[in-house]
Image (tube, rainbow, N blue to C red; front, top):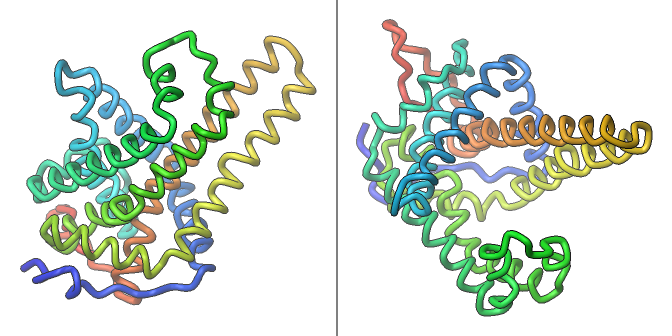
Length: 280
């Protein structure tokens, strides 16, 4: 397939705010169809990211370039599941067989976004950030409650937002539409801005159900089970809810991409030889 000439040539659909709830519901449904397989796949994903961080000399940078490559594997797993297959550990390697140069370029954009965010935050609250990264005994809770640090982090996130939106759908556009990195980044930014309402609703609802609700349950459980048993239950509940939330969000990357860029299209079948073809 020939890639589009430019970001403006990539067709997408603008959805209403309620669509964010639909993305979450559909992602949860897909997760429920293969819970164990998805959890294994996502655990392997984060183990690979952690292993990259331990690489000598380049460990701190490797994760930015590895993330879009591995995310293609999660997208491919969701693509295949939608067509009757099951997620498998081998899916994680699919990004290495796609347009690797374009995916690595998207990783460079991710690195740039992180640098913009950190630079902005450092300009506002640099003296508060340093202990968080250099002093293992630093009072993290006290530092995080500092208004100047909160302002710095918020400003950093805001400054990096355009690049963050640009990389949002970019890996999917590379693997499913054979887009170049430049086209994928531009099209992702345009589509994300046009669909900011459902994206915002998705994250608000996901945060409420995946973070606030588990914290409420943990608080109730700790009151009923004080001491070591309560601590153990609290740890298990928080770890379990975090894994479920992260897995659902990863599936939603595909669900939202397909709904925005391939709305109304019929499913392309799996190849006759079992090959999973990267088409929307």
